[in-house]
Image (cartoon, rainbow, N blue to C red; front, side):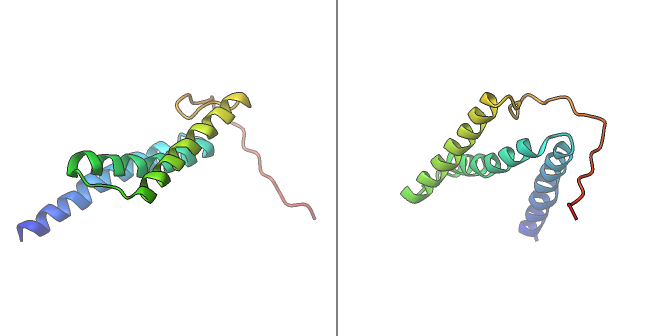
Amino acid sequence: MRSWTCLLIIGLLHTGVVYELMYSAFQRLRADMIATLSFIYPLVAVSVDLGYFHSRLSDVQMVGMAMILLSVIASQRSAATSGVARWWKTAPRSTETTILLPDK
């Protein structure tokens, strides 16, 4: 019974609270920032796993993590040179809504 209680606490409290915080923050961010953070989230989770549980990654997994990290860095550099704000520097939002309709 104690293990089920611990599982519920981890599932509801830790995961639920983190997802609530994450998705409430997503409402204030642009789509490109959300995409970047969506790639960073699994890297952080695996890094915590490596640090806390001292697990080991295979060579393929390490290459995959490196590719994700390099892609995020390249994306941010590309955004910086094109004049788009980086994910940690939020740009002011417009209050106008634009609706794009398909051409007939």
